[in-house]
Image 1 (cartoon, rainbow, N blue to C red):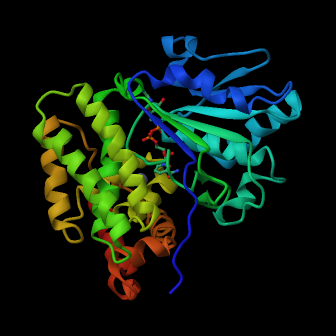
Image 2: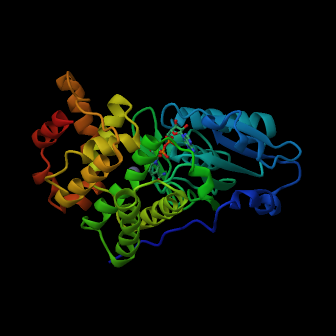
Image 3: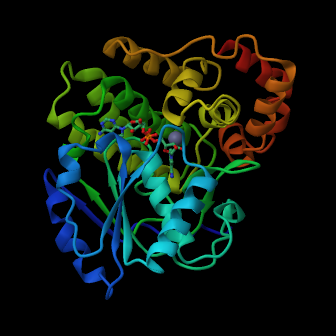
Length: 357
Ligand code: NAD
Ligand code: ZN
């Protein structure tokens, strides 16, 4: 048996207002004339958070357009722009939701690796460390702040750059930054964490490392989404830690059916990760009976909107595309259904599931 020896985030700071330590934290990483790049979710353009960025000398703010989930083209363009303008940079600080965090990780890697980010979609293809990178979440749930991947849509597939060089060197977890997220968005991203827990805890890859973190994240999700009647600061604190623990849980296991099916939606229809997982989880009574019931209670309690009927009117060819993308996620299916998953999740069965969404 070969156990996975994985790289984690090197430094973590947690606390309300810890964003104020950013200047001090990155100071030792400044190199000569090489600037720091602050890649900020475009939702913060003109907002007070942008004024709090500790800009020095030739540092630069770039706003990340996250209208769509990150693409390899977008990563390549940002990295090229920075190489053309500065040659090299001291580091990159990603501030935003999972999309911006993933962009920042990928741009960091592409500052030091040749070719296109599409060349590195897969497992352990990245050969050199990227530039110093910092992640600062403004939404919680994806676990992108702790993971060893950055999910990118490329010319031929949606797949992460999974490598030991991918995790952040530093993350800054300040619950004040997620405070003003719109309730529906907060829920979709929060449910990404809840679904990570269910998929990891119900999966065949589970071990005690994964289970310990998964149990904790699940307990936090239940408290904030089922027990609390009003969303307050405590909920933000707990959601931020749930995302961290949920990410740690899947670091040593894998996600499952909701993610595998949701990847197909995302590839064909551009459905975003959080909401896509929710759309699928809503119909997974056969695979996660308890989890699906509890998920529905959370939706009901908060009065959130989960779209229905998104696959209506699709052609056979379109269903085939989604099925191909989904069945391509082999480790996810194996984790969910075991080694003989192919005989359980047939194309017909998956088609019937897509038709229900
Ligand atoms: P997101 O980053 O896509 O952002 C969703 C929306 O919320 C955007 O419009 C954004 O501008 C806005 N937003 C962000 N912070 C806000 C705030 N504080 N207030 C108001 N609006 C805000 O959403 P997400 O759910 O955090 O991330 C999803 C992305 O994460 C997907 O691209 C997915 O592939 C990726 N992901 C990565 C991993 C990983 O391990 N690397 C894991 C899961 C998901
Ligand atoms: Zn996810």
